[in-house]
Image 1 (cartoon, one colour):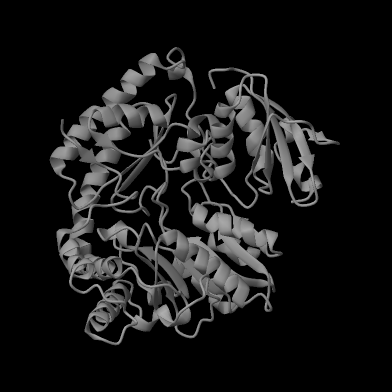
Image 2: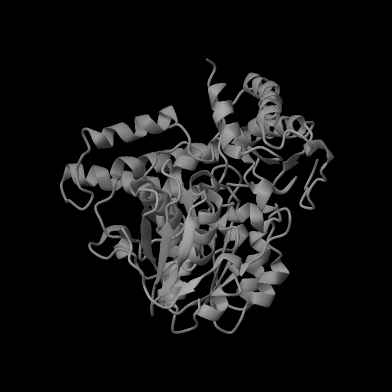
Length: 398
Length: 99
């Protein structure tokens, strides 16, 4: 059976050049980067080369990159690290309601530690309104953290505009760029952020390697104390092969970025225009300001899980977009935030494309998806009468 | 979240108890956050028999809405919440053996 991977926002296969770059650090260059002899020096060199590659991807200085083990760690580090470092200045943090759980849950944790958190609403396309950010700022505000691009609905936020407002008041800005870095141009100077999270496996690097950009001169409290690794800001013997892989993946992403965007954008547009021909299929997220390889929908009267399983049986691998809906029988907070009614939020499905997705894949998908919807509607408890119901007010584009 | 704020939630299913009650199984998920409260609940309900009571100890405020909602969706009985100074104890009665 043909297999089509359409879940690139979940993770990506390793780029072959990345695997080649990693292998020596599993084998001959096994030294501890802190050791003073040759194998240690080789490992240390690998980390510093990787730091340069990662920095270049986001237009940072090499000294501004701290390697971590995951996007979740970087997000926790940013929130807790800045909150603790600046708690004497103020105890108010602003995030959006559509952040990843690795922002929302540390924010809730910080609330229990005595911080106040404002959870900003978004519009029906998932956009944060910068004027809402401005209104939410108080004399106590120390940090604003807004996700750059949503992995669930693909919407890209106006981070530069939000940063401009924050900077006028001297407030630190973090953005979670896990879904965007390596997929669209990401420049920390243009976005004017102080901290940025990005993760290797989103751009064909290995799992277990990520980074937090921390602008030079920004104080941050470490999550992990111990040795002198990462300038004392993230202790623990480094995962040298993974970091080397992240550096190589970042170099390739920088080199191939426009090619990748040009490749996936028309394929994504084909999916969207084809899917919206089926009745009562709604595009979620912004119609234009969205990730180039990201198409997400709510399909009315069908459970997302049923769609995923039937699509998987036909060789198409996709996602429902939220651990809440797929694992915990709970509506996705992101979809509820953009105004999708609770009874429709279960019908969420997300397709994300990568450099290996072909036009032939998309033709097969465009044929198969309506068939799956049609079959599931035949056996759905809503089978009778769904045609007469009104589309919800959240309809972004039909 | 204060008790008063908790009542601003979708509180149609909220029920607070004055005293703790006996439970057949207990689980402690203090410091765990969304969606661990629901995933743990699902797992632990599978381990008890129909008619038995599970208690879940949590400090996660989101559970105030989510656990009664989960019980409603799955057909289990939400018996109530006993609130302590820094945590909640939820009581859930398993209704069907197949769950």
